[in-house]
Structures are given as structure tokens and as C-alpha cells.
Image (tube, rainbow, N blue to C red):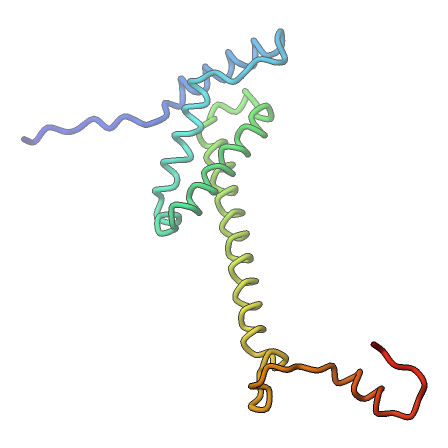
Length: 157
């Protein structure tokens, strides 16, 4: 009963580093080389596990999907910038994913804030107000009526 459970890391940093070095060596000979499935799986695991962090836990699934997509996209974009002298690829890709999540949250917040401001503007706008004398729904152009009532030769019709 008192057995200690051995916790294995979900991304082994040493194997991840070795695979990246092997990929970069082969990429020199073949620049169009696709990313190894092991590396792609590790990047996806970093993103999905980071979504369970307390800072990102309470967002809805749609926002989480957008966050994960942005995180993976940024990791793939900056994959070739990883310096193999730095032997901690897990930290490198976690930071990239973290900041991609933060940028997505800021975008979602700005979009939601803009929608709220616009709806508040529409609620406070008096131009959409229908007065009691407009119940017959016969709206007229007051500028046209004014021009017609003037003693001038031009009419806008």
C-alpha cells in the first residue's frame, strides 16, 4: 500500500534533445525534411499538458483549442531557431507555448471587450429610438421636407 509511484515525465528531456539533434543533422542534408512524429507528439504533449496549468484551466474548450493551435504553430515556426548548445528543449518549447497562450488570451479579451463596448453603444444610441408619434411606422426624410417647404427651385426627389 505504501508503494511510491514512480512519476515519469510526459516528455523526456534527454530523448527530446537527442531527437532534435538527430533531426537537425539530417535536415542539413535534406532541407525539406518533415518533422519526426516523436517531436510532433512531444510538442503536442507540452501544449495539452500546459492547458491544465492553473492559469489556463478555466477557459472554455473553444478558447483552449485556439490556444493549443497557436502554441503548436509557434513551436513549429521557431523550431529551427532552437540552439542545440542549450540542452533544455522542454523549457524552450514550453516558454514558446506559454507566451502563445498569453497572446491568444489577450486577443480574446480585446475582441470580447470590443463587442461589449459596441453593444453598450447601441444600447445608448438615441438614433434607434422610436417615439410615440412614430407608431404608424411612416418615416419621412425631414431634410427633404424642409427643402420642399423652402421657397426654392431645387427639390431632392
